[in-house]
Length: 537
Figure 1 (cartoon, helix red, strand yellow):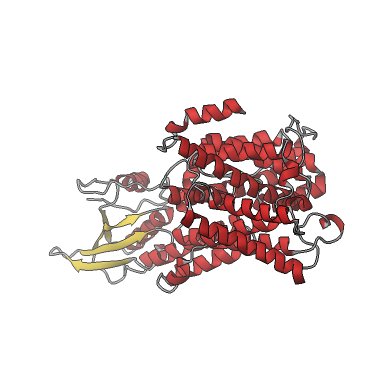
Figure 2 (figure 1 turned 180 degrees about the vertical axis):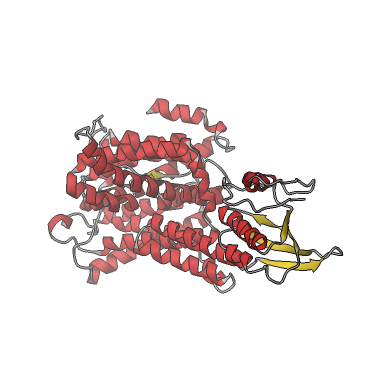
């Protein structure tokens, strides 16, 4: 581990411009310690959600966190076992057992590596800003709701002793004590930066509250009440499943879903952390890093994972800006598992809940509540929709829904922009100057612009102020030309791009280029069904 740490420090300058001074190293290590403490209850809880042993979640947090910190696309990001993946895994574990989960995680990683090598990470640019606002708002609510389970008395059955629901809500003095410690933690986190910047405020909150609880012997839920985190080093373990086509058919659907959810959440976290730290790029590198991390964790008995926005926010707000913080968080977590589990199990859950509540306050885009009345109605609807879907389903579904709604709204708005200016030349030809983009959404409106029955014998359609986008546009142009040909009237097409000329001239008709034709390209190969089109000069 020491060699890994030193190698990362040696390569730090190639990843960012933060100089590794003694003060910076201290900040990064303390930030990593804070993140590691917050990772423990999260990893344990998500392991229970997935129906696996707590160490399966803790090993995933360590391995995924370490590898992505070393080779990920954005220094400062924290990855580990997440609830978004756990809710998908539970069905596979229940039906086929944990070994099939390990196999699915390995395949998930391979898919993510392929996505990175194919540079599909760049498509995260298609996520509109309203979707990002809804995403972070929904995420903040999800993080908040996830902490409420710590205010319950453990129930019966599988949930008993896990502190993750299934019981009654705390009441009376236990509830008051829990709320008081949460409030104290939040107050310490808020006040610490005003007093000193020597160490991260969340770490101060955890440390002071833990000292009070342990020193005075206050009877409140602690990390050890969730489960024991004691264990050894993760060991190499090939998933014990039949290497057959049937096994592939079982795990492939889960692997595809897990890979998609993991990449979407990771890339959105990458953008969010990038906005805070002022860094760009790295999407495809992050895809590869996530893939390598999940492939490795699958053969070391981990449940897989992806970027964790809550822990990433803790890291960057604690001063973590380099890969050292993420590496330190992973190594501290391993240290907790192997050596320091008795001490870590004594930390009160109230302190960790207080930290996460401050993350909620810092993550929620409060300005979005103000701009809802100022932005276009469609954007406001998307913000609210993505927030609600995030809370009701999962982050990946919410983002996909938001992007689809935004794309449809954009297409509809552009479909209404198509119109034509007309005039008659001295020679008696009627000119249609098409305005606005011509694509599948505006094709029907484009057809309605023309009147073959009443127009003169020569028609000129000028696309200088338009843009032909797709196959539907080419089909619409062909349909208009066919109508004029049926009426025995000549049509000239002007200012089409060179590739439009090539695609439309497949009918065998002569096409003449103009010097001032545009040079944009359309992304579709099209074959004209009938030879009806004329010159483009």
